[in-house]
Image 1 (cartoon, rainbow, N blue to C red):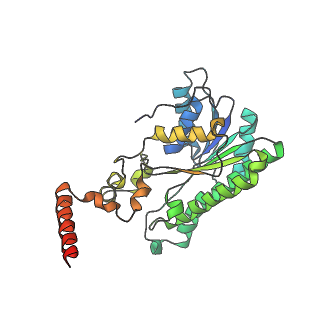
Image 2 (image 1 turned 30 degrees about the vertical axis):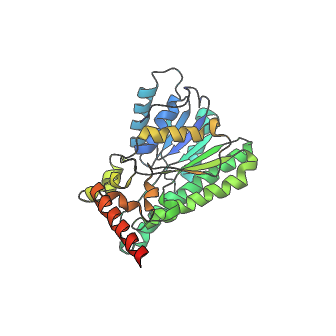
Image 3 (image 1 turned 135 degrees about the vertical axis):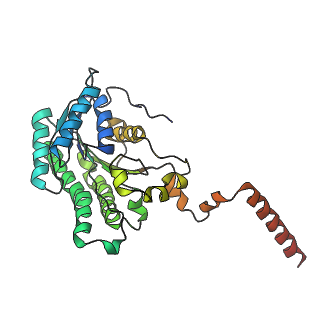
Length: 299
């Protein structure tokens, strides 16, 4: 398992990337690697004190190497277009331009759908879908007006294409964002703008993971039991993929959603549950099938 950086140290040197939800979890891990690769990064989330602490921590970690980028922390609720415009303006003022956008802000409820209020459903859709298309539209207009080729990367989910019970607002929102990714990849390609998505499987993050899966639900939902590789993802693995898709090395990839889940979605196959059958049970089953075949030949 290789989780160290896979790209050359200056792969993103001179690039400026906005990361929504960059103060914690996966957004923070990806931002760290983008900085190590030389990118300047604007991290945003609703809580200024959280992103201020993250910015300080990331600069202390990555600033030791001369080629690392600089962090700008700007508070933003992605449901508010004025705050989005402020992030864009401050980023341009600080770094001169914007080259990439990572839509990572998210929210979720694990709940039977009939238990949700209208407001609860709206909250998830507004953050995940509305926030994604607001930010993408704002940055896209800036790129088109200034004739700048840009790259958008959306953090999606495997159930954006399959659907899933008990996370219906998230599935609706992620599904919509994925279709937007593909649609705009076709429409904006003529401007040199690429849009792609990553569909992660389980990548546990302290805090978010605990809120979604408190005990005893965490033990009941052990994801490794349904993943062919029998482990969860490492943040470095996702950061490597994200950096590649935001870099010029992926310049001929657009409109794609890349799944990184250890094979989890493959387990939906009708007979994949047979992995629980023991060797002894397979031996018994084989003998039963042989005897049944012999009996049928005699008839």
